[in-house]
Image (cartoon, rainbow, N blue to C red; front, side, top):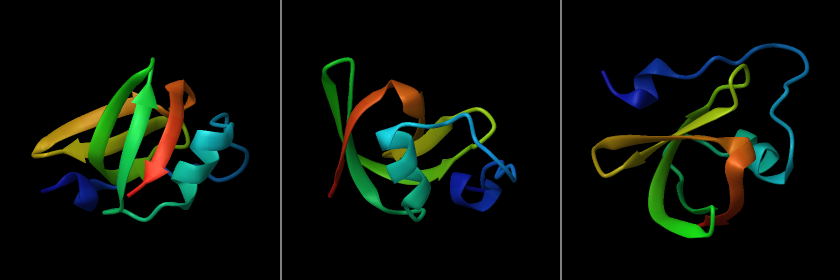
Length: 80
């Protein structure tokens, strides 16, 4: 089973995951490729899996490995 099969918690109602990057991630479809900047470090070519509205955890794939980050900590996102 892949991360794409599991999905994320999509809690109905207001989300505590606000801000520019979180809002943009909520609009992405699974499988889209992005570059992220976190604490001034660039993380290129990550494959978006999902965002959990309850925890604000955004899940990506970095090669075969999961890359999970709080969307509120991401400084910038670039759609590739």
